[in-house]
Amino acid sequence: MAWGVIAAAATFVTIPFAFLWGYLCDATQRYRFFILTSFAAVTLLLYVFSLTTDLLTLGLIYVLIAVFQVAHEPPKNVLIAETYSHAEWKRSFARYEGWTELGWVIGLLLGFILAASNAGNALMLLVSVLLSLISFIASAILVMDPALIFERGMVSIEKSISLLHRGAVLLSRTDTDVQTLKEFKQENALALCTGLVLFTLATSIFFTPMPVFFATTLALQTSTIFVIFLLNSASCFIGYFITQRRTDGSRGTTTVGRIALLRSVLALLPTIVVALPFAGAVALSTAVLAVMGFVFAFYSVEVLSLSMEVIPQGKAGLFTALAGAGAAIGCFIGPFIAQNMGFQYAFAVSAACFLLSFVAFKRFE
Image 1 (cartoon, rainbow, N blue to C red):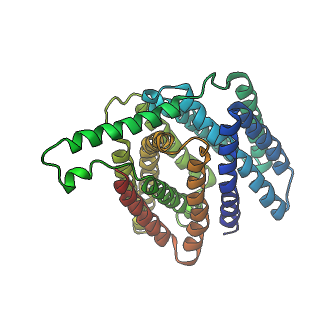
Image 2 (cartoon, rainbow, N blue to C red):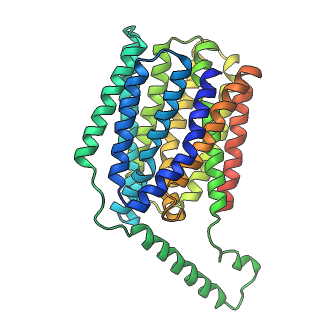
Image 3 (tube, helix red, strand yellow):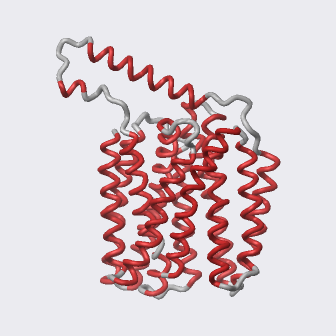
């Protein structure tokens, strides 16, 4: 429960900072600077974290890590959007997120190896510090600001022209009626934002208490839990790999809606784990996390691309802030429900939130 409170507090604090980082990077157009600041600060704070034992100090440092960690998200999204053409956004986001997920896979694999060899938490943190330092050095060498900032502006103009064109075509019809006029509407940005918050909320409610569920309900060893989450990340990486090669023209809102509905069903499956034999329970839980990771790759790419289309310049941090709001609430609600009512209720609430996000995404279409 204490971890849930700390994680929720840290994520809540990052919400205004996500707006701030997004505004500053767009206002100054110095995206590389904020990415390097983020990685440098996180590296230093992780090292201090590894030397600290007091719970209150650990909590404060964790909050600071979260604040600076989120600083690289808005400029990263803008850099991708401005470096590639609109037609290449999905593939570019998939490529970036795939490499990021590969990092998660390697990190979990290292965690499994260290846990299996009975390495202490301090050593694990020092490995994290080293990896964070490497990311800072690599970014300092490889990341550059784009020479021109215009792609998002061009997309906004294209969408306005497309809206006017559709309106002219519809109004020229002799059989124009109410149903036809419904096609002539601007995108419901509020519905997209609501769906994003609910989806992230549901994800956080589901995943935050999951390690405790594995350790207490299924009595799994730490190394085994690492393997299950490793498979989750590996499945997500495979999803990003496939996303890069998709050539179909399906609407992004249709994809994220279907994924939200599928995740609603998947979130309910762990509620029957306790009724299964041990091997069946572990197999079902592993399969649920693997499928969730796989479909999340498609959701992540689609919603990132949609956010760059809908969110105006100067508010690049809105996407990160909304996702952070859902995650923060879920970090508290998930462990609270699990501790006071049981894990089954936490999974059921997660499923309900996924279903509500599906409804919101349908409203955006």
